[in-house]
Image (cartoon, rainbow, N blue to C red; front, top):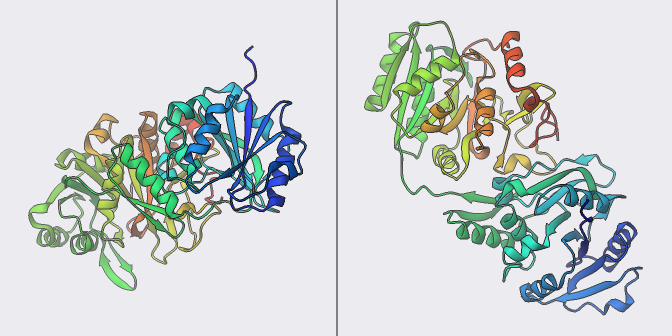
Amino acid sequence: MSAAPTLTIWVDGIGRSRADVERVLVESALQAAPGTDFVCLVAGNEEDSADWAVDAAVLLVPLPDDDAAVLNRLLSQTRSDWVVWIDASARLVPGALARVESAAARFDIDLLYGDSRLPGSRRTHRPAFSPIRLRSQDYLGDVRGFRVEALLRRGGFGAGHAGAHFLDLSLRLGSDAARVLRIPEILSVSATAIRPSTEQHRKVVAQFLGASDIVAEVTVVAGGLQVNYPLMSAPLVSIIIPTRGSRARIHGAESVLVVDAVRGILERSTYASLEFVVVADDETPQSVIDDLVCLAGDALRVVRWSEDFNFSAKMNRGAIFARGDYLVLLNDDVDLITPDWIETMLGLAQQPGVGLVGSLLFFEDGTVQHGGHVYSASWAGHIAFGWPADRDDELGSMGVEREVSGVTAACAMIRADTFWQLGGLSLDYAGNYNDVDLSLKVRTSGRSIIWTPHARLYHFESKSRIATVEPAELATLRAHWGTWLLSDPYWPSSDGQP
């Protein structure tokens, strides 16, 4: 059996009180193995370590404003296999370091983190490693471990990153997501579940993306960072809409759903390279087709549907006639909120490894209909279903782009070639779970699924037909996907609660 990995504890006391720093040092010393090294990072004017009340050998390291050289010298002198970074505002729970050591010993990884809880509160479940989310929000928490060899191989600490070093290291080590591990246990009691992003965080993310040859614009916003991916080209995007020309009262007025959906996109979308592929049942009134022709002209392709209702088959038929490099699967009962929705989704869809992109959808009354899929206890549901628009979880998940287990086909973007490589939508799911099945095919192909709050639409769900769940479809889904539906790596529960 190989020897247990050795740890060096780095307590980050920058901006923290001396009492907090000493408390974390004591907590760490009580849990650490004999001979563990301790480093205490403090502001440059802190007093000498001899006065610190801790029963351990502590190296007090005053850091100048430009601290990379000092930190890299420390790293090169580290005798341990792992550096465990602890923010001094947190409290270690009993056994936290043992959990870190066990994970480092059992898995071939370079970066690890775990769950936490707020004082007097329940557990804060941190999502599985989410590279897109990490660009917008350092959500990994107050305790994380870095393999020393990996840090040295990646060049150590970067100059000019004071105050955001550990986000920088997490981004770089997280470039290989397979070498990152979330420990599914509480490691700390945190003063806050998530900390505000700063200008330093913005600089770190922008530099990381630039070094990765990813063109992006990063800005500090409420709740984190916003990363915009400018389009280098304007590929044709085919919007596929199945319809039967239904009418409904929307916001108090009579609406022909598909006509008003197309009109809203044409009048308010800022992306010009679009075509509409409308898959229309034979029952669709000719007046509806005429109105669509008048609205969209040469950008419209009407595909007739004469078979029984099958959402999957209708979408697949539309995709056959689509000419675009990217497909938007869209219900006819939607209304656009954000004019740049296509640019937002397309910028994400063009990122390496991304297979499917979904949007934030609202019911007619302004409550949330879709914040991504969540799969748990053999069920599939929607994150934040029914939440008020201003509600969020402890981690601010509703304000950041993030990996999810799946997204609804009421509004989703996918590359056309990816859609066909995955076999399109399965005909086994005529009315429900076709998007769940597609999402899981995307994930098992090694691609990720991204949900964005920056592309927003109303979805007047069940206005166009009565929504029912067929037991046979649910049974088929469970038989096909089994354990993939038991627990969700990106969201902890099936009802959208944090």
